[in-house]
Length: 379
Ligand code: PLP
Image (cartoon, rainbow, N blue to C red; front, top):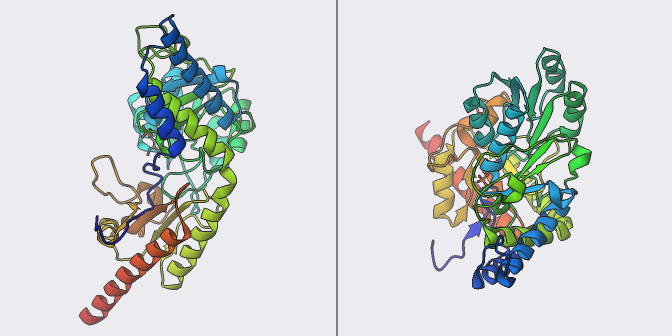
């Protein structure tokens, strides 16, 4: 980071900065650690922190507190849902072609037959395809994320749930990217299970939740103590959970402020398009703070590094956990394999300012113009 130039962080879909309310809750909980299963006063105080947080996370998605199981993050929440569905007797899995690896790899590892639900060129799941696929025999688990991590495209989960229910299937919704950015109503979505992760909404990393509706029975993956009503053994991450609750509360209360992120995001998109960039998923409903675009010939990895040198932190369409950049399979699934190696994701959030979005545009356009000039010299 260049000390003379304050950096711009627009990579909230990777991890959002910790909200001050979450940091306070985290530190307060760490100051007097105790085991929530202990019956003495300190233990009861820790239990109280966990249960207050549970109520806040439940309120974020409109469910009773008893529907929330705390886990270690979005990956574990997705895995717990898929394994629970398998234990409940599903015989095959349909996952949208744009699911996060946490869903895709767990589905593949389940040993059940897996089919990919295609998306159209806006990145929206094809429900006609789903309706036909569900007509085949066998109880089916359908995994359809609420919003995509790369493009921000919001999926027609409520419509999909009508189809899944008509076939007595199980609908799992990865809402990791949607939470804190758009309102979520669990029963309105018609989901059986739904995954959340604290660090995408201003809480700490390493804590998340699985929401389960009345039709879903959550299986025990970790054996040991009876924590989380026997659904997830192991002493609770009390500080992380308390901070998750605080982030969920402030996220819910300040949801309206996301509208200005959309304005700034759209203003940036206009500037980029005017210079020849292609915005991906533009024709669909999207998260208010996510922008995925491609400048043909400007490789994702080079873009990320060039932007970083200019003090602007963003991600390639698909940054994997090793930090390496692969061509985006989400963009590929949208029928734009030609643009997949050039996709860049810019994602803001609770602390992003209009100036951040403008500086991001300045940095990208300056680099894009340099590339264009170099190409003209070579030609
Ligand atoms: N699902 C989606 C859509 C994500 O974007 C991510 C993280 O990038 C995950 C799941 C995994 O969440 P976690 O990092 O909490 O395991």
